[in-house]
Image (cartoon, rainbow, N blue to C red; front, side):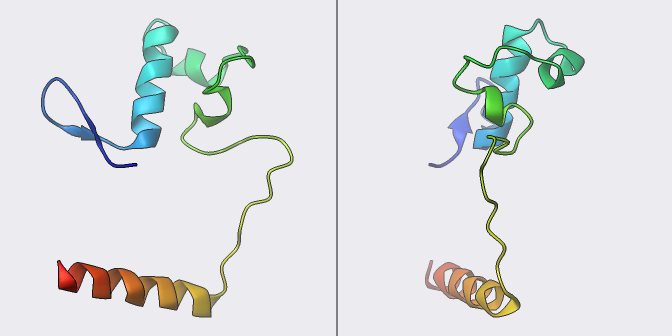
Length: 80
């Protein structure tokens, strides 16, 4: 998934778009977004910009895996 166009032609990433949706839903208050209690909302677990679902195991990459991903990204951009 790429960037989402805004009316002013700036770009949003997914986390920013979800946060903006939550701000709009809760009347523009960032305090209300972090204190939201609407667990039946599909975006509830993502409202803080991370995946906070209960029981989710976060992946930890080894230094070797990080280096391989970095090199792959660098090579991909160089082909661009």
